[in-house]
Length: 341
Ligand code: SF4
View 1 (spheres, rainbow, N blue to C red):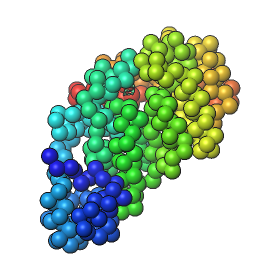
View 2 (cartoon, rainbow, N blue to C red):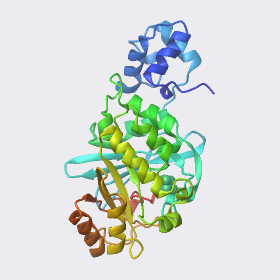
View 3 (cartoon, rainbow, N blue to C red):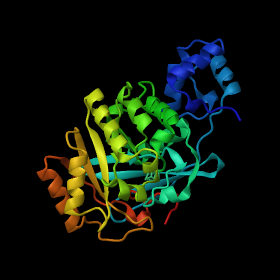
View 4 (cartoon, helix red, strand yellow):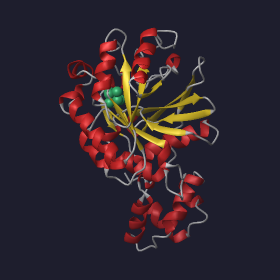
């Protein structure tokens, strides 16, 4: 099968053009055709010289992606898009409405190898890594559904972005390219369960994306039960990497703490978390646990979760309490399993 031309960053496409004996400067026009105009046939690239179009068509593929199936939450307007990419690889994107804003959450892999016990994607196992073109296709579809404007973008859907980092990085470069969507890297957040070598790489990278780390629980023994990756990258090492990241980039990191009722939501648990991340420039995002099976409560944070948040605030931490969204269509955190209700 010919490689998909949309898997190349512009710098890579320039190299490819040079290797075909063509001018590298055509890459910008090709990018505009692919991303600004959404062209899916080389013949329709009117601004690209015929000789270049023919050379590209001979070497690369450019097929439209199958349209996504869509569900809309009757509770809060959250939208879920299910893509069935080549080879049956399913991936879901979610469009989350907020106060005067719309955010998109993209998948980086079809399924996930990490196996977090609270996550429906983890139960699927890894089907395969998504290619850059399959990641940017999700963005294009979300942008269309959002009416042409997205306030922010998070890589928090199916998969562990740092285990498909080369492709996610390319997707970030394509999305933010001035000749494509020119979407600001500063509006993108990549979320990881704690793949330490890539956190370290990002610390010295020129990418401007933000970093979110799923702490999940502040106790290493409890975390090991919830997050198998704890065995490879223990929390102490993840937090040390986060500390270095903040220092190196002079940037804030987000810590995602999933609140499990009666498991990690006591005052003692809050104290452990406060001690763990002391001195790090961060914001703690508290995420009430959603059952992978669907909606369980009324979508409101529990009294204990609110008390947990108050304790963090009293200790001087910035916090954000995320409301459960889209759980009636299995679109909330931890529920993405390529299923449409
Ligand atoms: S929480 Fe993230 S890293 Fe863990 S299994 Fe789910 S998708 Fe993978």
